Image (cartoon, rainbow, N blue to C red; front, side):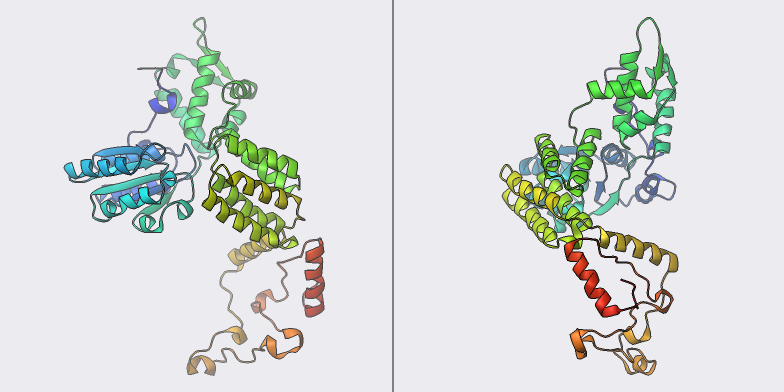
Length: 424
């Protein structure tokens, strides 16, 4: 065995049974397994974090369905490469074309795939770490099944390590004592490839010709990760650390730290649209009704970044980042959402009050649908006290306005309108 090949590559699964995790796709009742077994393979897009098996699954699907397999990287390939792959596929009577990071294809490159996917010349399998709803053309997306791959759980990572110790010829020559796993799993971030390559690094660094014993502790893992892996790796641990620091700095009203982490991400090659999307989410989740203009600015920021592109997009991102970081904060609407979701899960489908129901037919009217509904605009201040929630939830409060200038005004208005019905 060539031990120069990374451990993650040496252990790459060869069958669906070898795949750790993703049982919703590969398990006995998994949709992907059934698709392969029935020989009814559709064009697919695998969406999930790095190291969750997107490329591996594409290769396995090709092998188990006995189809020719062509692979392109969206970073390097152009329309010409796509057309050449389509022509080669015709020679084989149809083949699987795997496109890694398909979200990096522009519209013309994605359009070049449409006809071949539609007429079955190729079966497309795309892999993306980005939401395909944003990054894949609707016309192409409508021709594909989208399957989500999940980050590996700690239990999955343990199974993966156990398999590595049992199957890899190099690791079997070492006496490996896994004393602590916390740092190893934390630094892996649910990424199988990162876990295995980190293990490869540790074993290679800590073992010697004199002894084959390797003791793995949190301290050793952290030391090696800092000295060997401390670089911005899109999708890797530092990537997530920077994103987390950026979000928390905006939320914490520190424009200086926020702009610093934004620049770190851009310098490391982060897609500016990813940052812009995070700002849109932040504007609603963390600024909210304390400053509704934040969401307007963030949405316009995303549109402008998409339209302008780098390097000028960084100016727009800087403006939006510093504005949101400097704005008053409220997560009241986000909290209301989560509380309402929890209650819906608990109480199920409670009946809508009769007076709020739609009554388009005589039968519905005879059943008192819509009866006694009070039209708000017929009353002073365009408001009248009436029950809108299901009877079982009467007077339940989900939205508690935050303590800031704008939401204090909202609370004052709600108290004036509702009196003692809701205790604002």
